[in-house]
Image 1 (cartoon, rainbow, N blue to C red):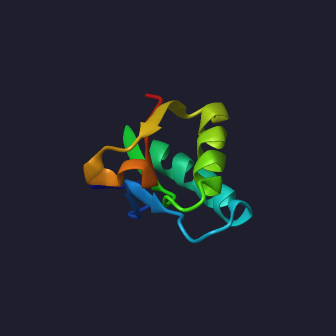
Image 2: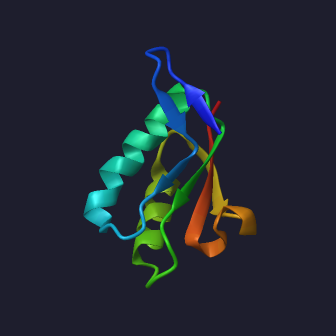
Image 3: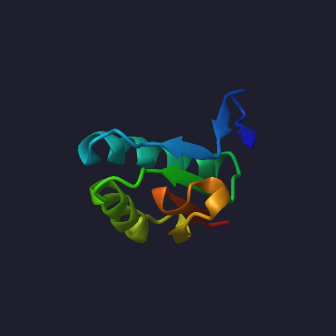
Length: 91
């Protein structure tokens, strides 16, 4: 699902970070959350992969402190299971 911003740009409801380093992914994650919020999305998914768990841990730690994040949980099996995180955004 995508939402349109006023400028005509679309915002996807999923961000794929796997294969990136923590330092590469955090600015993209922050930008994605703000654009998703501005587009009116209430739920998005962050794909971080399963791997060693380093990126997953960093993503979840970051989400725990982000002001736009209401809640985050492991994604369901249709959205990546433990290789992704479901994020509910503030209204």
